[in-house]
Length: 412
Ligand SMILES: [Fe+2]
Ligand SMILES: [Fe+2]
Ligand SMILES: [Fe+2]
Ligand SMILES: [Fe+2]
Image (spheres, rainbow, N blue to C red):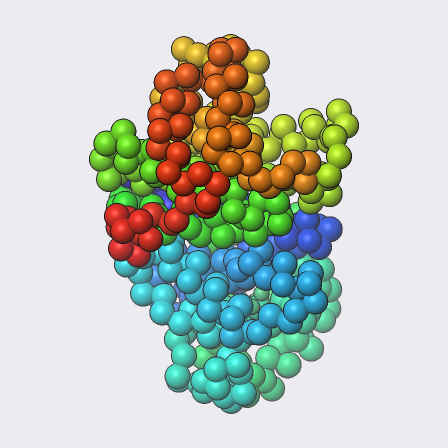
């Protein structure tokens, strides 16, 4: 599948921004500022476009493991810094396979004098990590989006003093070379989206099945960790989709693509407040409208990625019904292709069978009559429901294993 990778990365970053906004009350665009600063510093080292895209992507995603530890933090657990670094590194590697980004995020909290979490000294960790580290620290401590330009001389002084101790000498030099009034202005809340847009060079990539699977996993880690009640929703739908694709003898590429569409189908749910997702009682009209908007948001997030047309169509049609009564576009049977119908059926199967705030977990035997009834009413595809009955029956009410545990997925 040939896609515009920078657009996919931006889409994932946008999803992360939504989560950040949810958590902090407003999106800070922190990742975008780090990305813009790294692009400018990278240029002072003569980095080429490929190196810059790898660096800016890592910068954008350096805190991407956020959703994975929100839950732990909510439960009062302290998440260790090395773990945060490791998760972020793994996420970036999912997207940047084949690029040399070793250690870029893993070591973004190292200090030049070796007092960071991994004890690496200047020269023992890569330039990419040095640049992310200095940009990250300055932004966290000085809130660059609102910093008064009058404060610049003080800040420059501080950077000089910290060179060789906190920041590496070459990263300090690069930061001093680029941090002026214009740069500060470009990081302000009115311009940062534009600045970050320019920071990441556009690049196309032919991604193979293995990369598709890895991207899907990363997206699921972000989405499923949002709420206790969606924890395994996405991954179970992806696993079920993969199993159905196998049942229909799809080729490896289509198996991976439907897996990815399933992984992304509820990405718009990140914008739905937890209080609504986890509400035990009946939703009122307004709450229901907010929930319904999640498919529209999935559509908006995915539709601008070049090469993603079919993935977007399958993912964003999962609440459509054959008689046109679904949402968000109200498509009818003749506008719904097979994989869109398949994903819709699997989504219902999963939602009905999994534990929800308003109903307990249901077995296969309890789930299927609900789907057959919907098929009888002309809402979902009867043939697919019969196939689901056959394929999911052996699992009864157990969770489906990840494809590789089933022994057939491409190696990661
Ligand atoms: Fe960090
Ligand atoms: Fe950060
Ligand atoms: Fe949904
Ligand atoms: Fe869903």
